[in-house]
Length: 116
Image 1 (cartoon, rainbow, N blue to C red):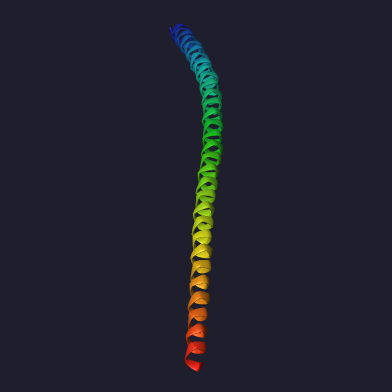
Image 2: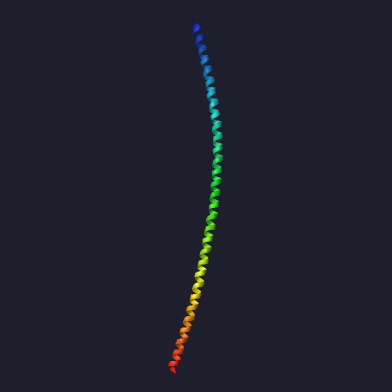
């Protein structure tokens, strides 16, 4: 009877050990599958992140060009305004000089008449 019990227990233990090995292999296979799937997801995310980085770089470059063009236009408009103000100032200064010369001439004429 003892021998039969030992054989029965050995059979049960071997059956359980085999089932445990099979389950362990299934778990390992699933872990490997999850690893592969995670690797694929990570590569996809890397690719998408690369696309986002390229898009951001392109946006920054376009924005820089637009800002540069805007500042160049503003600079050009400012130069035109300054040139216009400068020309007007020169014209007014020339008129003032003419007026001053004319007044000086009149004063000299008046002083000559008083001397005579």
